[in-house]
Image (tube, rainbow over all chains, first blue to last red; front, side, top):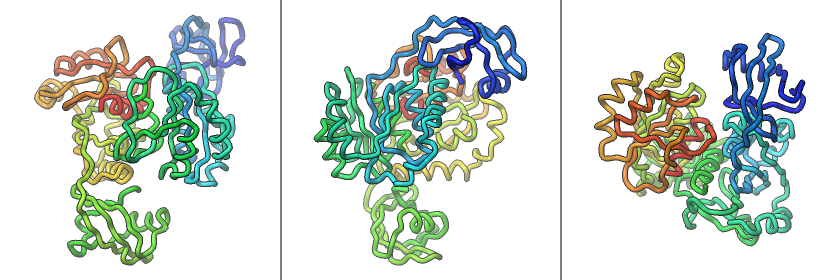
Length: 235
Length: 235
């Protein structure tokens, strides 16, 4: 936790918060914090700054906070991701949040196992929990938007074209395609497939929606690695 | 498993292997393979090619193999990594192996907890197991070399300068440093710090050994994410 994230309910005054639960435990066990310590803080979906620990007991921590800094810029990106398997989903949500993706769309694909859609990790609270871990890691205070699209065809035919309009549209896909471009200027819409890749029908459909296939080399990467590698290459 | 890796002990003839254990289980449960199927195979530290399943029972699988392809090229890189916490170490070993790093040096640093050096995941067999998972993921057959340097100062003073000579030496470190370069030509020696970063003394020492600090932006990334992002940026 490189940033202590504060929620509206934590505020007991305009410049004072009271924390318990997971963050209190973290202050005790990881930060080994003491009254008087200064910590980086951020208000969820708001500004960031410094907090001074006024008191710290087993029951609660109280901090005085000054929130005078803007959160770091997000990437100019909409990321489409074929729904990963549940364990990978949690890690990918953290990675996406930490790397500054402002909008993630979890999409169905032929090679996404149907059971993946049943995971409790897709519940809004479970998604939010992982996104917050990513924000705390990277020192960002603004939650990404996560959309869930369980039907590939209507999404790609109807909603994707306007969504991708005016952006550089790309599909990460192994094969005889151009290299993923580097250091692009302007907004990007990037689609990353499931383990095993998109099927040809899906690549065709994504191309019709304005997304061009690009590749990262012969090596097949896990989804989480592919996400961080493609974003580092693009931006 | 996108590649079935064969070891010397698997060969019952020059072009025939017999498998049991983990790989047999995988053929049954994940590939749902049947006699006659063709699979990508590679000989550990040797060539890659195709295998045809001659027979598949609960006890063993027999394949006829043709190994006529070179493994994919490695990156021209020596990666120095402050020893990550044990759970992260396992994932990082897979990532490093999957991305084609030929040589990894696990190094001590002030912010590496002493207990991390006691983990059973540092045993040679445990390291090898994770590296093999990475090779199977990425379709590569050549194990990276992993060196363990438990004393920072003698390594960085004495062994690092000749090792880094003739390469572009870089230290990934958040701060007011130049951006990590993109698409470099030629060999690189890259050092990535622990959670919490290198301490200033360590950055100084690494600089004296010829490694210049570069950064990836304000966001603090987990080690695994930083590794894949830095490699995708550099190569």
